[in-house]
Length: 114
Length: 110
Image 1 (tube, one colour):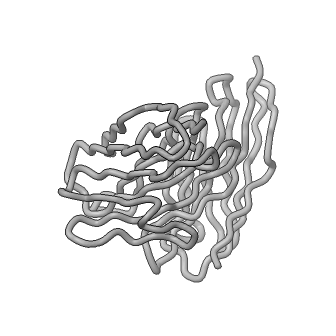
Image 2 (cartoon, helix red, strand yellow):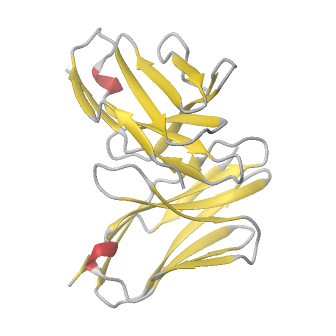
C-alpha cells in the first residue's frame, strides 16, 4: 500500500478566498488524483495529476477554479479558488502504484466555506 | 458512460447475521472493480480489486465476487466494528480514474 498525508485536515474559509491543499506520498508514484466528496455523496473525480505534464480535468471542473501542481513524484497540491459555500466538501487525493492498478486514498481535507 | 449502482443504500444487521452488498455496473471495458470501506470523517480504505469475471477475494469476514454485470461483497458473521460505508468503483481500460457508486451504509448492532 501507500501512506498518504494531506494538509490541512480541515479548514473553515470565507467566501471569495482560496485554499491550497497539500498531498504527500511516502513513495514515488506516477499517477495522482484529486476527488471531491460533497456532503452525503460519493466521490467525484476532479482531475488527474501526472508529474511533468498538465493536469487533466474532468467535465465540470476547470483549471481556473481548481489549479493543480505536481512538482515531483511524491507531492501534489490542489487549490480551491474564489470559494463559495457550494465548495464545502471533503477533498481527497489518491495515488495508483506503478506496479498495479490499486488506488489508495489520503485521509481527506474537510473544507467549510462560510 | 460508465455507471455504478449500489444496493441497498443502507443495511442494518445483528451481530453474526451474514448478508451481501450488491454493486451493478456498466462500463465500456473493465480494467478493475474496486471495493473500499469508509468510516465517517476518513478517506476510503482499500479492500479489494477484482479484474475478471469469476474472480473472488477474501479478507477476514469479507469476500468479494465478480460477474460480468455485478459484484457482491459478502459479509460473514459481522461484528459491530464492520459498521461503515462500503463503496464500489469501476475503472475502465481507457484510463485510471475510478467511477464510484453512492455506497451502502452498514450498521451492525450487538
